[in-house]
Amino acid sequence: MKHILKILSLVVAITALWIGLLQSSVIPRSHTWLLPVYFVVSLGCYGLLMVGVGLMNFPTCPQEALLLQEDIVEAKEYLKQRGVDVSSS
Image (tube, rainbow, N blue to C red; front, side, top):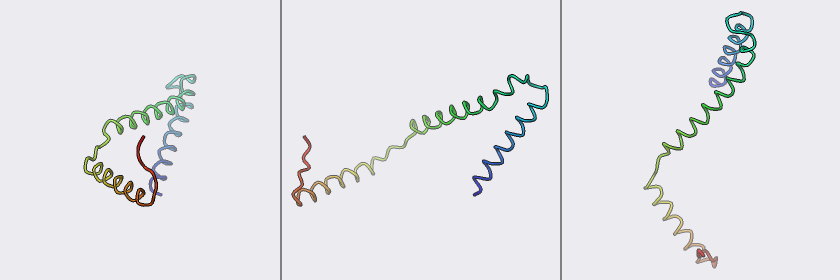
């Protein structure tokens, strides 16, 4: 619930800033109308950047990989005992 309140307060603050810029003549009106579009595009770029950074820093877990391989061998043996063909072609 706290996270939703943070997001809503941020949206309200950005909306208030945008409406304030529309009412004042600090920035030309033609540029002010495009600010939400710029914001959405910037948010999308930030999201893609965070996904890319997360993929580049993805941790490798060699111990977990060994445990997974052991589980695979165990599952193949179990299925072979039950008469299921699990040989790789």
